Length: 121
Image 1 (cartoon, rainbow, N blue to C red):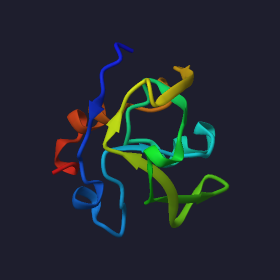
Image 2: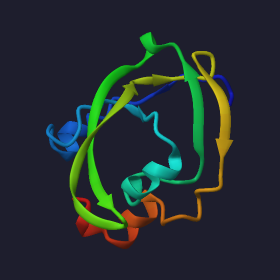
Image 3: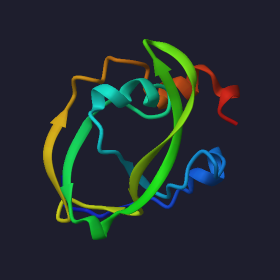
């Protein structure tokens, strides 16, 4: 909000395995948050879900592997196309909506890591 450029060089493939993710930095998806919240639960913080508009040249196409559920039951995993970038600012990523309605959906990733530290070595 202050106009700063945020920087994130985290290589998610190095952390989760390159078959699981090719993303580096901040990750974005195009599906509705309602659809993706089940896959992201325990991985990300749900404090605020941002909808942004961005020039496609500012992001890189990547993939992430997430759980696949049919009728609420886990049936395997699926690769989902995403976008990522190592820099984020409000000049290039135009804020469309900031939605806090998902923050009570699940414990955020930070809290989950505090409760179960041995799962996130």
